[in-house]
Length: 413
Ligand code: CS2
Ligand code: MG
Image (cartoon, rainbow, N blue to C red; front, top):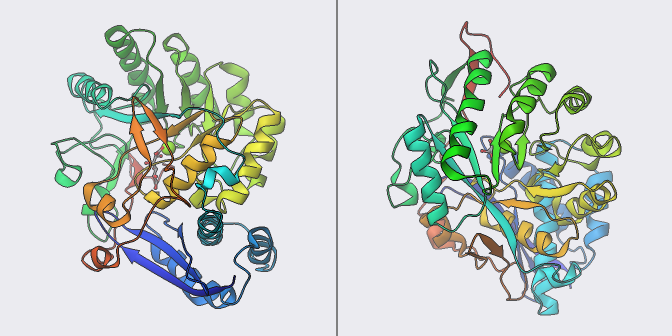
């Protein structure tokens, strides 16, 4: 069974997605997600110009060898563009293998290890009343764990905090993730003041705990904006509110920063949505500096590579906490759900819910009920790609916002 066709598909059903579709000579079709938010066409070009011609004629069953061929053979290893491209190939080959075996993909990864995946939703509000409403909305949708993001007095719009009603997902729900897609071809500039943020966030978590009680798992994302000592201060200040995790406290390049943070706080730490290989995690695992791995299948070289990362993490009692924003397509999310149901060290899965247009294009068959995600039971990933719908939603340039300090200095985000 050989790869006969490799197509790179780009569409914007509310936001941009890059999808790889592999077809074998005997007609099996596999899908892989290659979406890199705000840099989508770089991965599409990498696949189109450099990988598709290499794939034609390869044995579609040789997933490991193909992975090594693309990773070692490319000479230029790692990096988000390369690893998203390799991820798409890897995921599509797993999809094909599972379809050939007539099994849902997770069965090839060792079968079920749990009844479902605990998922967390996104709640946010500029002010407390909106935030409470947003948490209630999440609870009403069945979520049993909620990420909490808040506005900060004196600052304007903040990434991660929904500012406007957005029709894209229906139901009058406030969303931040569909806003950048509507902002046009130049990134929005936001303003940031770390001291104001550090003063405000603990007061919000105190209020939320008082309102919603001690049980509900609460998460928070600092989006890489703090220095090690600021991160340590925040972790310590949030200890009374018993967070499930505090995410991306420091910029992703300097793993040693997590040592400082860890010395000062017992708040669990999650990091890794912008990491792309096991090597980014190595020292964090070995020194037990984090508690959750944030990588997505899409940005880490696929199911083959992410499973290896989880196995390594398991040795150190570190769990999965896979990135599941709406810029990971339903193909990438389906892959994460199959992997998450199989591994021994599952922790939690982010689930932001795609728009109705995105669902129409991909028709994902994973389910979400009572706060738990479950994979489709049909052969493969359980996701399709509708070319007609895709054609009706062409690519539109859209960027994540950028972040500047009040004096105009570019800041981490
Ligand atoms: C966020 C994402 O889901 C998260 O934790 O950090 O919104 C992230 O910023 C985007 O996926 C970036 O593309
Ligand atoms: Mg994040």
